[in-house]
Image: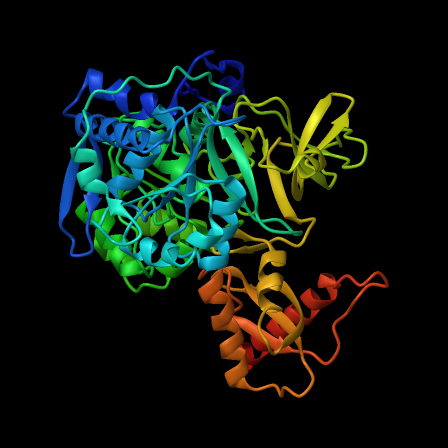
Length: 561
């Protein structure tokens, strides 16, 4: 949607939204290209052994049509009560993941991205809360779902890409039995398409319901952060899982919209050397690399020897420093563009090195089409430049979520009325500089930012207190030089249980197997008394001070050695 301009002001002046009344994500990112250029490469699917398969838009259309027909044969459809049926996609980066999202959205149903490292509690909550009717997964996912079925009465269909594996049917056989002809649903741009769960500070993760238009809303931010995507020869990759909005709507779907090949390869454990080799071997030109990935890659000696030369690098989730920005230019061949957003309203601020050099500590400018301001949270009044306040986005906005699933009160709390209209509160604080760029200051709640993930403490605390040795638990972020922060759990033990290193490891593993690998506490500390308010709430601010003090002591020891 962006037309390349010489400066930011011209970029904004010449921007106009193009949101049609009727629009379907699956048709846009698949069928449109399949009809115009069926042999055009859509996805380069790289396996663990390094072999790869080129998948064309024509093949994507044919197979996604078969999958849509297979799901419809099994009773999945767009007309189920107030909302269309929901379908979970529990797969890593691979071609079937894209097929699933394309098929589900073409059906007019609602797709639910699910992280493959989710444990039983995380999966039960999302599948039960959403009322998912079907799940598309693999053998590992089937093993997790097998024991969860009694708690998921709405789940009637499971397809496994690894063949028959109880309790699933064979994905390949189910698709092979169906026609390659399918008429996509004639959806409106505002009809629901995606349900992406996001963590908060209270209660379980909430489902952010997005309309089909959310992809169009993302495009200006993606194009700006990647120096006016697309250009001839562009080829995209990210280590971020496609189960998260950063992988799905910042990389996969925008790339397919523009007809840019996407490299599908997510490492079970991120390796800086493997990341460089992958980008080199597959001619990657554009990459979304979260700050943690960049920090790990910077530790690799002689990274420049890989000969990687990217056209654009985007990063978000944590402010980058001058040293890291400088290293990116040397080792990756491109200045890194920071961008900012959240699951509910993503890609709303970005830098663009094609317009001006990135500034350390500055997120960038409001992406054209979005009105982003620093406001006074209680009144909704816009604050002057240089004044700290709440980062907010004026609604309506095509990238903004429709609502939280089954949570009208939480939806209402996300917005504040002001003199200029209704503002969505991001939950972050910042200020705008005299140049108009935004500086991130911090969270105004207890969400933990770790390795690009936004982690809510409540779900972790609920899991911790289910451990038989734990009486009370509080979870906060402890500063970390690589991940930004790690989850630190502070627990009081039940009477008769003694602290030990073995118990620390046991408690951490207890959370890891039930929630997800990125959510488990890498730090477990035992406290004699939990800091509480007079109304019985844990004072997480006091726990954060303990974590920050511990980190300061560790840094002091490191510098004196």
